Length: 303
Image 1 (spheres, rainbow, N blue to C red):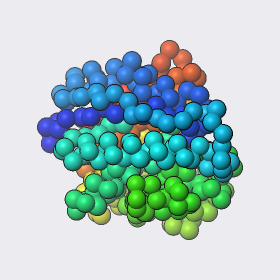
Image 2 (cartoon, rainbow, N blue to C red):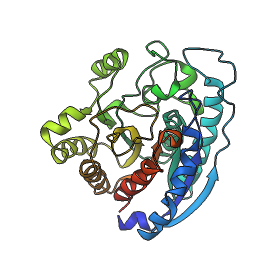
Image 3 (cartoon, helix red, strand yellow):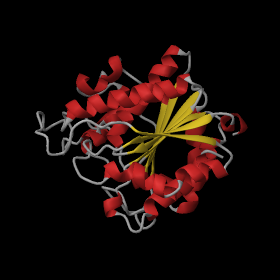
Image 4 (cartoon, rainbow, N blue to C red):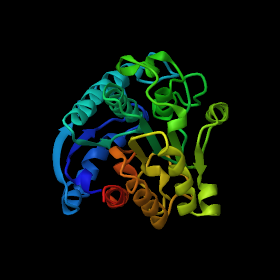
């Protein structure tokens, strides 16, 4: 990763909770900073600049105009600001590392990355590390919470209010993406996954085949077609015994060895150019151990 170490890492905080419609994720950026993400990356040899937080518009108490896409006006407004900041970072030849915030943040992060790639002849791939598929639409969602929709929207599926963020759709191609760690999928999400023949790697598969074999299979497929990888890292992919501070815990997640091997193997492709860390909820955490685990784990991706 020597080439990456020549770049400046831009830390961009995104204190968003509207996509989850609950308090706590908005405190994630501060918790990650408290856990030492800046100093940890500097110890790994990086030049790190903390750019502070994006201004998030609206609050949970605001009236929902569409119960199938809660707070969508303010999610879109805030996500557009995030997209602009991410794209600007890439245009400066920097590495944007976005600190979240609920997973609706991926609407903005991926929009900014995708815009940069489209305008600079890059072929974008996405590795989505998550217990959930986040591939609901406004028609399939059981909750109306947008943090369950960003992957589908980035692929161009769902309401055009979400798919068209930042002025274009779709942001990514299904054949250039992978979803790993899933173990809690809604029926509508599974139907879309089946329709697309989408590359998914479940925790059941990881436990059965081993993380090295599964990751190698995933990356062999990806690196054939892309020259830019964005990693969307949801902390609920980790087993809740190790990272309890998330809004929606699901048992039997990645253990420490598995997630570290996964991150190392992704890093070894040399294609990782952006990262987001999502869904830390310090209100539900114990002595900030989830943020500390996330910081330590993310460092393996950056080595």
